[in-house]
Length: 297
Image (cartoon, rainbow, N blue to C red):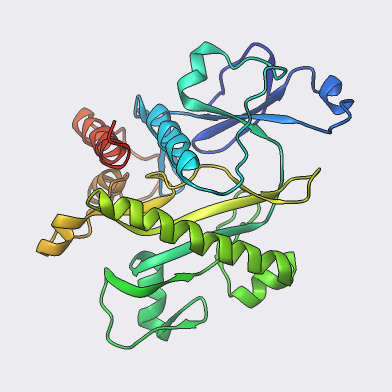
């Protein structure tokens, strides 16, 4: 999983699916009076499931997710980490369609999860406790039920190699302070409600999503960062399929096709098998369908 070398940029980190770079001459940027620093976020075509990076990659996935993030950033009236600065090193053409030039931020250690439906890990917790992250919900809810009001269920971003941990709002306040915790919650809920409305106009249900925010080290303001409202950070359902019911009502526009195939063909021991071409094609088509539905492009 080696990251590509990019002229003018120095690789500093690779996650399962993204590579991060800083300017190769960062020392010069450090001396700028504004303190402005840049980060190049490159979305790879790698795909992961069950804590493994799989083979082969999904060619075109990185560009689709980046384009969808950019579209959402344009729709949201919230400060974000994107920059358009001619003084920054140019973005290499080889990754231009799947990269974002961003400000470097002091990232908050909270994943800001908003749920408009009860499903996934939230439904599993609800079945055990009747609540999600300490938020009591009405009895008798089923998997996939839409909530009357979205709920904010933060998670602690665990150190590399460990799993994130669902936490209460009170615990998030202990981690980042009461004022910041409230700002993260309120901003996340406002973005979700706006995004859910836009998705609904396009026949899509935004079931849940996660946001990440950072602090601008110069202005001290809250800034929306990372990817936003993509297939990898959000769960979307087709509204007409959901309304019709049936076994596919909760089929999401993401890599669920990959997870389902792995679950049926791998015992989760050792190295996962290579994905068949038809699974790769179907997964890319699902990503592309959501992009077209949401953006109209």
